[in-house]
Image (cartoon, rainbow over the protein chains, first blue to last red):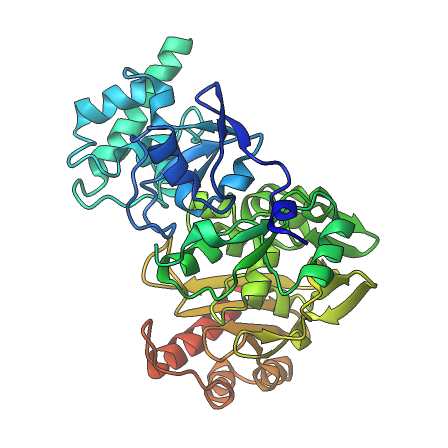
Length: 160
Length: 273
């Protein structure tokens, strides 16, 4: 059997931030590298490259995943959302600025993408659990938890 | 990234039978699903395989269902699937407890129970649960299925009875009588690998399984017998200390692991009494 039969579908089609894309890269390429290098979405950061730090978190079909651990082939047909998909004035983004939730900024996109999966009115325990897969070396986390909770309150008020 | 990903071959079957045929015809292939172990190996350059078999499209193997008295959990069920499953929460709460402590949400969303079994780490968090629950592993090949008791699945450090042309299809868990208990001890609540991990069932015939204290997950038959025959917890701890032989490694020391194992035994007995 030839290598061609091992890559049956050729370029991988999926959507990123609502836009249809098609990427012709090896099937085991990391989604992280495809986002940054092929699609020029450099908001998604590489921290550890081994699923430990969460800096590369994106939503795949609505669930936070580490894009450093996703082969491109598994993104086929998926809906991927990166930090760029939030625009620049999402309540979470503004709250991170306001509350000092971002310092060096390396963990921030991953923190925000993970926070998007939290329930509408997250308890502090839920925020801590929801962000347990994201490491921050600057803030000591308290400002991040505050940012997530105030953003959630703002989103609820806006929706009410 | 030490492994050149561009050189790797990936087979992407969309049916179970196609996957099993590919494995036999094109093997050896390394099966992948949530990739939470294999991409770590790529990062460190420790994955020798160059040809892979993507199982992620095999939807029938992701199902969680009741089949008579048996709870069947497909190998591709993720930790998030398991946490959300009402069936697993009702029948096997110690597996839900383990799933919640594996990695963080990102890992739980991708990592699968079949991958945890196949990876075979002595520290695999779900493995003591499967040992204490007396689960059965369903192995599939192009010839059909066979069933292996989980406690007979591993033959040594990261070695198992799985043949090169077989895949883990599911685990089947019979009804567990008694009170289930799970506890993981690591350096941090999330994203940490266990120093010691225990799953146990309180019943007239107690069951105790430990991870991270031997080359494979282990049951403690002598400690179980002691507790079952009414020995004091101090006496049972003494038996446990004779029965378990952990080692020093990067995550902990043998003496710490022994002490924590004995403490966990007491904690289990107190919490379920």
